[in-house]
Image (cartoon, rainbow, N blue to C red; front, top):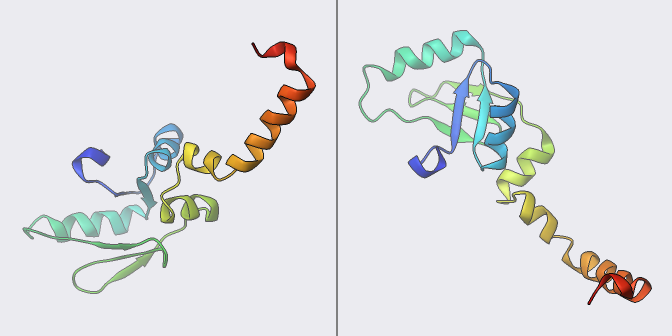
Length: 114
């Protein structure tokens, strides 16, 4: 979905696996009430080029008419999305600690390394 330009998906609910995979792939799943989602569909149908503004930092979705809806997102996941961090990026933030561990591990257990 990211390849098709989707950066956020709005729905009343998400299956757990899909919800978690969205974050792993840099897509923001936004949960809004069924009533709000229905009103957004009614607004978008007759409007060519309709666009919503999604502000992750403020945690809001704003329609072209100015109607704003707030949504919840876990602070850690918000941090990752705002900083472009996936699982590998999170790990690479600790590269110096990893190198220190590897050096110590090789010194204390050299028989494990050829």
